[in-house]
Image (cartoon, rainbow, N blue to C red):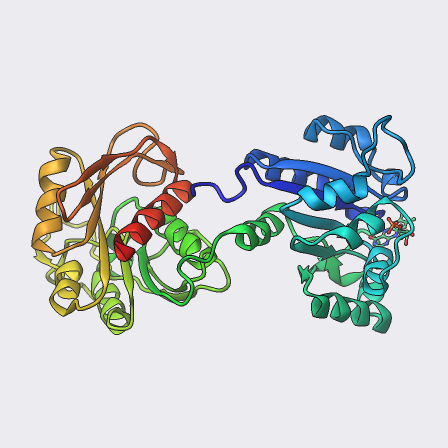
Length: 400
Ligand SMILES: Cc1cc2nc3c(=O)[nH]c(=O)nc-3n(C[C@H](O)[C@H](O)[C@H](O)COP(=O)(O)O)c2cc1C
């Protein structure tokens, strides 16, 4: 499994809410992930966005009229319900929420929804007073009890001028929920420890030694593991990224702090994946005051930081340990050396300086080296996809 939505059949239900225009971008985001999306619109939704937009983007006829004949014997509300892997209602109006809660079937969307047996994601969006009304809240509770997945609306300034909950979350949030819903939970109950990002070794209060690691690879691995049912602890150096809300995040700055945090959690972990680019050296002395530029040159004496992978391997019992090796030359020699000396189960070798790969890039090109001597060279791919592929390989090796 590489991309969760690849080839999946998704039905997007669009209702007559002011946020209907946002479902156009949501449709694009799902299609981008190689899913096949069909759109059902209510009659009122068409007051807000024309069906032609959804038709052009989805390359499928939009379903709007329950009784419109296609000239064949198909019964669309049943056929579409049987085919779908997942359904998203975005925006879900107060009206459709009420109809779903009470089992009404008086148009194409509500009738289709009664026939659906796959997971349904409901994204309420409306004026704050409507959303917080007792009627709507009761209906939302009913939907949750029926097993529908309800995505809470964002709070903020709404199109109608009120401020409070009711805004449709961004497409990336809804796509995230969809991907998680359709991802097999093959790491359910497993404890993951993932490290990410760079560390910083302070020289004085305003300067430090670091590297350009963005943390993208480690965050992608943590997210993929969480989506696949794992309990994830992410120990991260300073990055600009936001981890998924269900991940336990420990923020650190220096290599020493990262080492302490890793050792705190390592014994409890089943799988340890060390993506962080940890500084190998730190200044021997930390100057309490900013160093002044009085001299033409200064000498900085460095000392080794603690070798975290080595410390982990010395305590290793049941854990499956994966390391990363970022190298500028002789990748095989260095990666295999590290695999053996640090007693790793798998090492991900990364040639720094290659196009579309390494630090800061959103894609990566790596070679996997296994402890049994196997070598697997992978194509360039997005880091999120690589994260899932890496987990696929870990799953095979943990079981095998
Ligand atoms: C300008 C305008 C904006 C509206 N926005 C919303 C909205 O954001 N959420 C909502 O639940 N209803 C909204 N409504 C009310 C719905 O359009 C109305 O309840 C309608 O019956 C919903 O039909 P549907 O659920 O079949 O699409 C809006 C109505 C108008 C005129």
